[in-house]
Length: 205
Ligand code: GDP
Image (cartoon, rainbow, N blue to C red; front, side):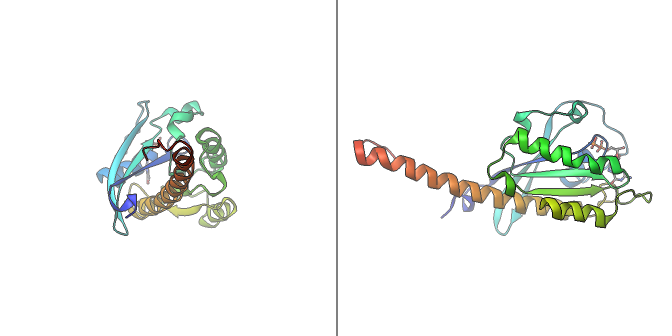
């Protein structure tokens, strides 16, 4: 039996993008089923947790928010490290927030230094589709996602539109990443443990 059938798996998900695009609103909507029009001003990294079931596997999604620190641009290595999926959020009524995603993605890849970076799962989320002064079209967003190999979702934290679906997609992508790299690590562990057993015969594993 593999490890992911026994224990709940903790997946680290990081939600990044410009300040004001709705990152904490999306998380709050998904985890606490709440929405507020208040603009949060506190600074400090935080996360919310939610248990989900993906194809019979229990997952604890640990969703990390930048909690305002994105205003200082570089969020630093500890926040990004160990992530299984990265959600890049923009506001569909702000071209600026969309064009900033390229910088956020690069920042994540450099600071987070994930294994197999070329295949790391990114989900791009266009928020605030309830507003009608849209500056970024669905087609435009989709085109960029195809270029970078990311999955595209759009919706509204305010109306609770497509929020659940998006985080299920995030959990699926994160689980795939987890399985791939746990398997790789297990393989490496077996190879490195075998040698001392054969040569010194005192390995406990
Ligand atoms: P963050 O800085 O990216 O975490 O953004 P917040 O979650 O604090 O949201 C910034 C502002 O956008 C707040 O006033 C929210 O109420 C508002 N907001 C967030 N999501 C939506 C949405 O889907 N639709 C609309 N109309 N406003 C939203």
